[in-house]
Image 1 (cartoon, one colour):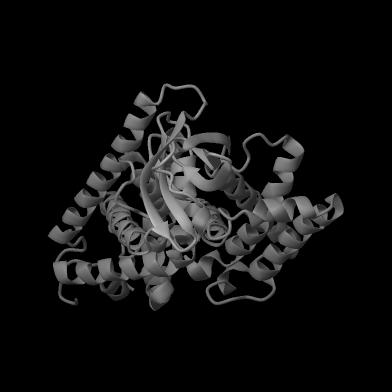
Image 2: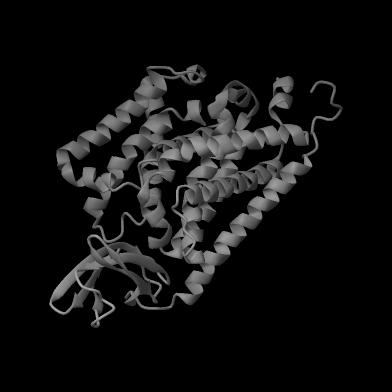
Amino acid sequence: MAEAAREHAATSNRQYAVALARAFAGALIFCLPLFMTMEMWWLGFSLEPWRLILFSVANMAVLYGLAHVAGFEQGQNWLDDLLDAFAAYFVATLTSAAVLWLIGAIRPHMAPAEVAGMIAIQTVPASFGAMIGAKMMGEGKEIEETEHWRDSYSGQLFLFLAGALFLSFTVAPTEEIMLVAFQMNPWQSLAMVLVSVSLLHAILYVVQFHGQKKRFSNSHRDAFVRQTLPGYGIALLASISILWSFGRLDGLDIGPAALVAVVLAFPAAIGAGIARIVV
Amino acid sequence: MAGKGSDRDPIPALEWVAATLGLIAMVALLFVLGREIATGSDDDVPSLSVAIDSVQPTPGGYVAQIRVTNRSAQTAAAVQVEGKLGDEKATATIDYVPGRSDARGGLLFRSDPRIGEAELRVVGYELP
């Protein structure tokens, strides 16, 4: 196991360069759908700057947690994790700026704040992708063996959050989330909550994906209360915070806002379920 | 990697470099956005004006290339521009004019807008 830790930790410049290259790949793979989503470009200048700043700062906290729980190389202490978080941010800004320029979303006559906003918002999911790049590209086993925080209860709750963000990010900026919310009737919304919770429980405890076997120790009822319900709560919170950051809840009354949150919580709950696989 | 003496390995220099660049990127982005907050003390009303950049004859008529300028910090969406030339009327809708930025489009006329004065104005917009 100590051997595995050494393999995953980058201790030479060369190894770290490989880890960085993986991070670039992760940022690209995860963000491709979002680079091609025009709502993402528009959010960069239609959102208030303070909201973008808050979103970016909150993102740093999530990045630090991701470095702690998985990361593109194994963090050896808090400093290493913090450095990895900033390195992922660097990879993400570079990737976002390059791709946004390449696809013509950033044009020469744009105001600096407009360009900064567009890069800042795209950087959030890109840095997420950079952080989980190694895991996506098959280093899962080493990571699971060496990052011990994954197995604590707080680590698991964080994994729910990371998984929820992972799956809801790519659909959150689209207009369709609002459209879906308002074309469903209240019964369908209620059914969606039940389906989300049941799917989360089923993914966690019934289908038993890779990396989840050691989880199932107690009864279903116990697991439902200790894992599934908090998991759905976290998925719902993740959805609300993304929607709020994207300005999607502005001007909505609490009822319609809840409908929209429930729609996004559907992919978020499934993401929380598969968190251990993807993050 | 076997044979390392200590159980805490040194952090490679490249890691410091990448992290420092990340910190710089973040501070730079936050600075530009923060400056926008500091200067954006306007009310919520976009301040839009429109002018002709150039005129080009095309088979479909004369194209007046227009530039809509927004002097306020408030972004305007679906900006409608109307141009009148004699008894001709042309309209264009521009998706977004971000705060303190320009956006471009075109109006088509049958006669040359350089002869006879074309009258341009923004007639409406949507808040994003």
